[in-house]
Image (cartoon, rainbow, N blue to C red; front, side):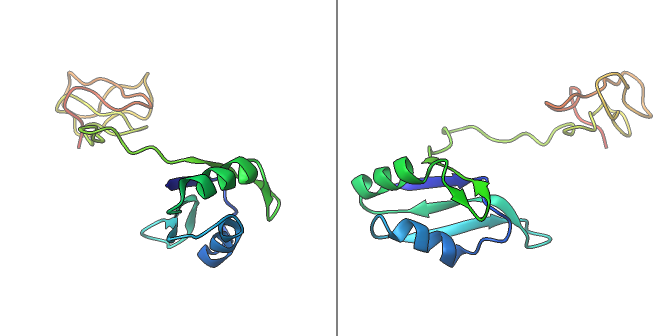
Length: 131
């Protein structure tokens, strides 16, 4: 079973996380997700356990447990639904524009140079995205 582990302390190492889960059974793999530019932990990771009963016991007992002063979140990792892809049109908080040079910074500002621009919101930008 693949297990999601969130709210991890940024200083925790994969070996420490492995040790916590090995108390409940065999652990096939441990991966703490890191930022590809800085190498710093993003505060979450995944643990793979071959025995579903052991994995469920680990989830039940470790969810909400305190690790290095933080209450961690532990639950079964669900695979991403087929066909769901992240769109890179527009731009997150910067908005986008319909042909605009640069999008706005929030939903109230329009796109930049190029007219017919729409401000973006936290869900993405305008129709075609800005520069």
